[in-house]
Image (cartoon, rainbow, N blue to C red):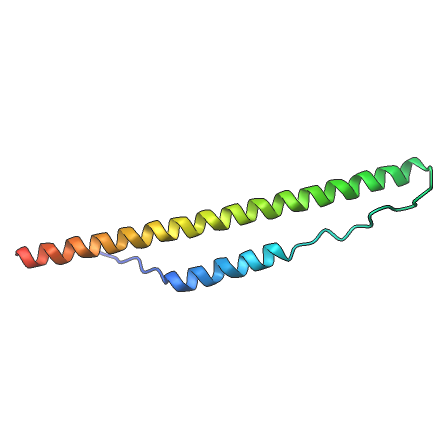
Length: 96
């Protein structure tokens, strides 16, 4: 129990920012309309799948950004708690 947990807040923030930047760069590169004017069932299915891929990509990006936002909020809470504990410990040592 005597071990310290050290968090490099700025380093974590840099990593989360990098993850956000990478997440925002995610693109679903699918053809908008394969076989335009073609009546083949396969072409219709491919277009439907491409649309699903684009929707899933956007949902995945939103999920990653939400996760990163929660990491940042947790980091802020941890930092505030760390400062509070430090303040209490300093006050305790002054009383002794």
